[in-house]
Image (cartoon, rainbow, N blue to C red; front, side):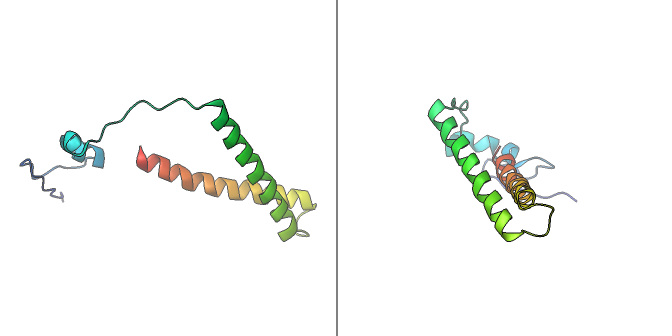
Length: 101
């Protein structure tokens, strides 16, 4: 079963194409163009690294306080909490990244 897509340009049916392919004829009309990604400056790289380290520290601390007693040591439970949370957040953000590409 195929879906029908209605376009002002007269195309009435497109099968199994991505949204990018469906919008390609209208690229100029909507001003959608994709430039090369800009280089990351040293300042931004430092900021992103700092935020990652702060996230690691705070989530490890919270994991230590919240789940103390369940694992062999408090630090082990904190690191496990940090790793689990970071994997979940990373998968979530990767979904946004893939959807936007």
